[in-house]
Length: 355
Ligand SMILES: Cc1cc2nc3c(=O)[nH]c(=O)nc-3n(C[C@H](O)[C@H](O)[C@H](O)COP(=O)(O)OP(=O)(O)OC[C@H]3O[C@@H](n4cnc5c(N)ncnc54)[C@H](O)[C@@H]3O)c2cc1C
Image (cartoon, rainbow, N blue to C red; front, side):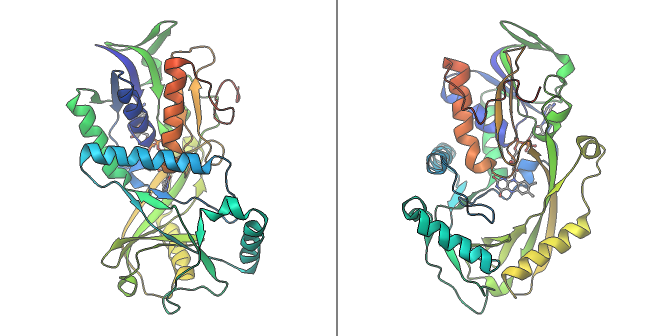
């Protein structure tokens, strides 16, 4: 079989890449090992423009947000399914120093921050907000499992999807392309998430799995809440008093992750429930719990590009905890690089930077 691109892994990264290549008229074959639980299948899918406690506003935030939303809405139109929901985020300050930092940020750069904040509307009985807060605009969430399934169906319709475990040892590269079993492709792009740490072409990239847990909860007292609530931890409303809550972060060695030593479920549950208790006094009933391994290289910095010695072998990874927001723009940029030689942004270019 011949194809233009062999994509290894159909998580968020492989799915985004496949859509962009199909949009550019290229043939793809996406091969996924079909694991029950992956980072993308567990992800909450939140888009939080001003993430973290420093309220840092990244330089290209607006451009990447606009691109991501347009991209997801385009897939919604093609599939007829709602995938991305625009939701307001009630950002409650953890303490006085956070409140002070926020005020100094918006006083110093009011125009840059204007797009992302509004006064907070609040029911003082249902939330803890002793230090106040603000309403973060431009947030939302992607139903990542639904996006993966829509993508898988689109690939199946094109006979462009297969279930298999691709071993990097079974891939041979030449200046004109790659071969895997009976597949000849122009390029192989590895979108393996944390499992990329064992890839023989990229084992020099310091990829670390970051274990994360989330809970499914019932909080009947917050049934009327339609905003994402955030105060260190977060609560995502799913309707009828159901919420998703998270999350935890534990960095692991890839060898421990491969051995399945990933999580302490009780510790995860207690940590998330403590975060929920900091948001609201409402009683929470746990109805589900999941764990996944985020692919992290340097915080949530995506790295991508061809292997320094094998230009037809390509890396796309490191989505960390911000893949939903940053992934689409990076997929578009990687495709432009591979197809027409457009430059990769210095911040994301893999090159030989970790060699
Ligand atoms: C608890 C938790 C909460 C999160 N919340 C958010 C959030 O709110 N917002 C956000 O943006 N991100 C969030 N994330 C992070 C997000 O899940 C990741 O950034 C993103 O989904 C990673 O996608 P990926 O495709 O790189 O990796 P993965 O999801 O790991 O996908 C890799 C795929 O490749 C397959 N694969 C790997 N190796 C091979 C091989 N050799 N052959 C064949 N198939 C292979 C795997 O089975 C998998 O299907 C969260 C993650 C967790 C764990």
